[in-house]
Image (cartoon, rainbow, N blue to C red; front, side):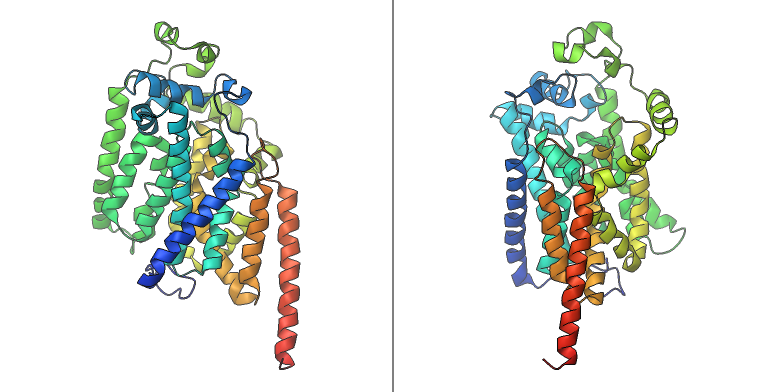
Length: 412
């Protein structure tokens, strides 16, 4: 991947060895501080709250899976996402503590990984920190996942980040291992499967390289099929459904026979294609991502055209989920690690255009991150506030750059 210093080659540029330990420490502190603030300003769905008791939600299913055992629970597609409930169920601690620890650790590791990836590709400490803060500024990202920490989305985010990193560094075997874990964590992780081929292919119709990539993905495909065959869904089985707790039995319409054609008819056609509106457009674009991260990512595509094109299939597959799943923002934020990589390059592009761009990007990132702390149960992006922050920061940056230019012209 090109660095912010040299864009003639897609190779990863590693920082000097003595800085790696420092970068790791800074990444841990920065990510931990950001997550600590989010936790302090977010209402969690813990067992003793009305938020948790709200019936019919995923958290009750994953908890039940951990209690019963991963091969006993059979409501699809949840029953196939065995990795996180298995760890929580095998943990010697309480289920709540186990699920929370797994989610917090996964998000923390995601922030550290993004910071290290930014540093490894040649970005400064301030720009790397800005990228991490922009990632944590997404309300439907870390904030929502921490609030509903029972779900496996935190681990899915971490695996997507690892998939991106291993693809950029051409670690095919590690990429294959990440995909295997994705197959038993949440099937949406496998949407990142094209990343390795698309980011590393060098010529059209490279069938040999394509074959290597397909072989590397074969274990994940095998595990995915094995889990689905080994855990037969109980959706539509009235006798099995009658054994469910009351907070699940109250919504039988949510657990009919699970197949993608029915999902497309009920969700893709009726809820998405036939119910198009401007409000829906916002929910697909700025609601999950805001303005700041996509804006910088768009600037980054100018200098990382090949990388952006390599990410495009993952983006398209992520949006294709909308045809089969009722969640919207929660599905789409999965591409956030890719947006951060592009956004950092966009920030580097600004640095070359505006003398004060680097501190400006960091300050704007801090301000944008602070917006996610303003409403304890609201995960949508505060678009008006983000626009004000970005415009205000841009005006200040240009004013400072103009002052600096005049000082240089005057020989100060």
